[in-house]
Image 1 (cartoon, rainbow over the protein chains, first blue to last red):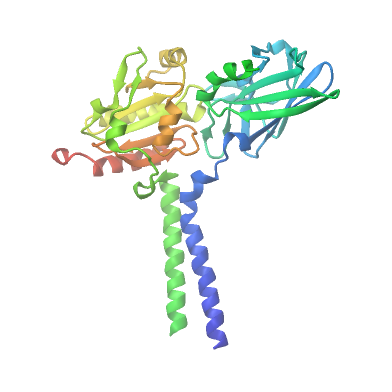
Image 2: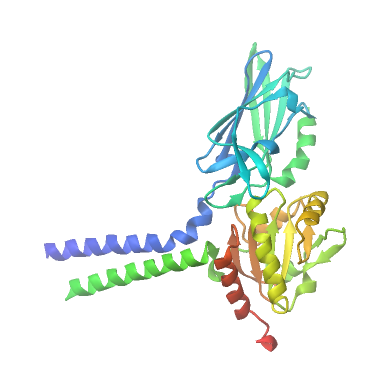
Length: 177
Length: 186
């Protein structure tokens, strides 16, 4: 009797294992992270001169250096005011020489000044891919509102504008009072 | 006796799972027709229209009556570009049985410049704002590229593919197309 119960338990585990193995291919698409989880972004005012945007890039994912666009107060920030760490340079069969970033990426932005109300609005657009899955994320935009309160900068609001369709909304969003 | 039956069932289960795994490996990460999660029916898909590269609006209904392979792509997407030669080849080899169309989630100037460098033999539609949203309606839940669907002659989604269409997936598409040809063409 005891032996029979043990057999049944083994059978149940084995069948469960088979079932899980069988459904794995169907779940493959569900395992892909949404952009704001694959590329987690935060922003902070580091000091009077520098503002930082930090990306935590999920393993197996990367962002293209050439596809970043940053706006502060509704105006595009010139590349000369941005400092990127050195990324991975590779020869892509499609795009030629490209530079990509993985892991933690901190972008430094020089001279972003708050508006008259002490608010600094940042819009950061990026684009990247998931290497193993062989898929790419459409350009996505993260918007940050940083407020100065009692002498300290705090991140008051953060929003993800998703992909391409959201980008046209960036300008109107950052111009909102 | 019961134990023998139990272990026979386990063996059969393992065999089925292994076969499923091998099939999945051979065919790529295609979603089978039974599990395609399109939220649109054939009529609403055929009613959609997008501008082509010259700005002329094209309705998908013009390709009704035979299977259509819709490929969502963009010029910034390296895996999308990798599969274009295979789609060109499929188009030239099988244009009687399938209509290949590309829908670019990109700007028209970008697509124009791209096509000047790498010609695309099949019709290309361009809609930077709506292409991803439309692909989501056709089952591309994560909204990533490249994404392709096979429509049957009535416009229903019968298979979808997220990721590069490699040679194995192209063969799978050809098999799906053969099963979905209009009766007169079979």
